[in-house]
Length: 296
Image (cartoon, rainbow, N blue to C red):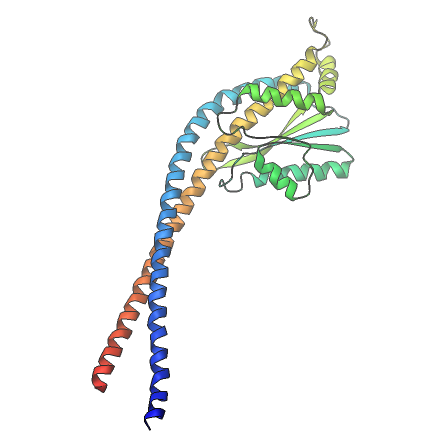
């Protein structure tokens, strides 16, 4: 009789221990998770403040670049684009070197792919170049060959010297009739637009301007229009990169703000669940104590 009773009591006692152990383990895991999410909220909040400070500097640096970009585009807008279809197109996708800024980088890659598909249907040869690692990574993942890539420009404000360096390399190594600069246009802290800017190649620029400015007496270097085409391409890249930097910091600030809000909401839910689980464990232990005393 004693043996049978022992066999009947031992399994129930063994079953009671893991329940309490599971409850305590769950509480400890939930407490660690609350601490982890709290630390994450502190990090995202700090990143939001850093991005806000960088956004202010990026906006100040963007304004003169936009003025120069509009001034350099005055002559191409006056003469217009060639009526005939271009044979080759250079696509320059301007993105950032870092992520955590929403869809600001992925939309650039999608726009570049859309231009490439349009040119493929029209029989136009497309050459892809990028400024910023994120666009290059997305395009490469999509199976697009990026022939010229430039990165590591995000550590300081993008300068005109860097834009001129990129323009010189592209003009020396790529022959194109027209270049399309794809970048994010800054509207405000919340809104931005993905735009395309067209830049004529040196030969097309000379052809278009010679017809439109034929009544002017052009003196100086015979490569004047080619030099202007190079300056125009550098200006377009410069203004596009400055605007893209402002969009990057604005979107990162917004993304970090959303992440901080989500973390706070998660902490509230976890704390509520933690308190309910803790109350359930205490109630279960009290019931076991009362039941044991009643049995005695």
